[in-house]
Image (cartoon, rainbow over all chains, first blue to last red; front, side):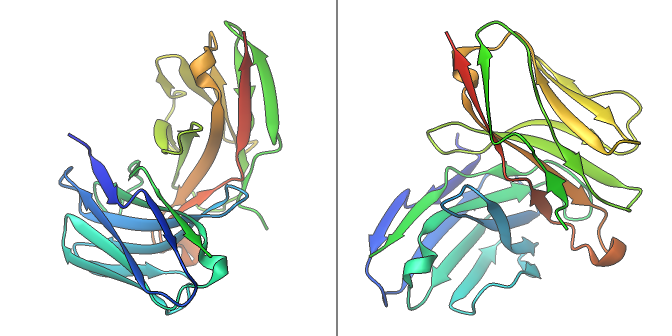
Length: 114
Length: 119
């Protein structure tokens, strides 16, 4: 009965490769997010989607491309991986976009680029 | 300028004692929400407690309470009767009203406080 799930949990890959991280929520929420947590534990928003539409696209390289096939899924595809992309990536969801409801996070995906 | 400041990188507390984790925020938006999240060593982010800027009373959830002092722009988390399982990173976060001052309504996190509970 996991509310927000991500796959894979760990991802080790080489520079230059392309990889995807999948996220699904079964909470019926309208809004989904991707966050990046760096090695110093700092969490920063990358993207927000509301009802499958992109709302926020922070200063993220265009090698990162989110895709939302439906309201319950938000996947993150990363092209031409670089060493600096190594981090933990969290997916999250919240009930609606335009109110300050809490966000529920997935378990995170630890990406290591070698 | 930092929107969320957590001045304590690390703290220790004795088991069964209470502990306060500090958080100050910076916004001119009259409508905003404040959140605390816990991140244990296993890595997941766990929502703990929420305080709305217009809420008259301090939020409480079990052993967690939020000491909200609006004029001082502080939103400290108080954990009562600490348990060993409370050892974790704790993050304070704020969400401003959508479209106010250019806000896109996303969560802004502090740098976190690492709490260690001693037996």
